[in-house]
Length: 432
Image (cartoon, rainbow, N blue to C red):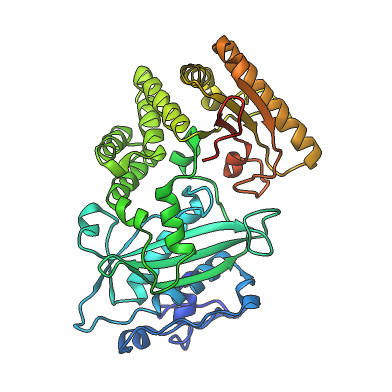
């Protein structure tokens, strides 16, 4: 069934479920199955109290739907739990940009999700006043939508062969300090562009950080009534500046991005790797080579202080040689020098751990990751000879994939990372 609006114009797939019950005409036939029914706008507004969404059975939860249908299902499940306020006033709502639930990165898919959810709220949930995710709006204690979009295997785990995307949406009420609604669904993988947005694609380094984990856990491990993760609450104001900075970078407004990243650094909770990455990238785009070098040095120092830093050195497929694209690898020599210099200043030892994506036979991946780690180890020792006796190399193949889709493009570049782990010389690895 192909739905049309009152003027016989096509209706977006996301709003299909909401309009199915209210449009009686202007339809054309097709072989597509009907969308899931959703509560009408009138039913939501008239509800005297929040209506709890039904908890799907385990079997139903595992069904993967087409992307937009799955998003509609999760969003309607979420918003149907929130009725109109007692005084009839609109409830302030902001969307903290959705992210991948493992890497913490924004992607083309998560950007699309936020846009579609905004359309749904403005068109069909009039109890909300949707406003930008800004410091001024956050200070008014709104409801904040957080969401994750994560590749998972058939059992719903972030390991092995990924077969679907898990959508998780949650509403966090800053006034009460609790999660008040949640919606989930599984989306089919074909046709979904989960490539990182420009800032995340360009970022040289990655690590797990408490602020991102707080965001993810507020969505994924919470249920309505649970308290919002404290680390997320503490960092949300800095998060609005970082969100603005990322948007400015992605739009090519590098001076604006640098200004916002610098403002975030003035806040105690703004000292995050994604801010340090942003300062480096913005300076690089502005042609400020010396400032960019200093910023990368700060990235390395921050990572080594945390005992673990992943750097995205991209190699040619099946090779220990870096990719020839100078847009990607031109700054690798500077990265090597700064990593070697900072590591040499430390009294600790360093383990270089190579990773590969899951494409190809695992014994070959294991061998290739070992060779790549050895290559980086030798390069570092060449930059700082005193390090030679304090660096070891190890390959882990694809068993620690973060993305796991095996596409071997920019969407899973993080799976081909090189990790620098600080170790106690003569002792075990200090895992972060």
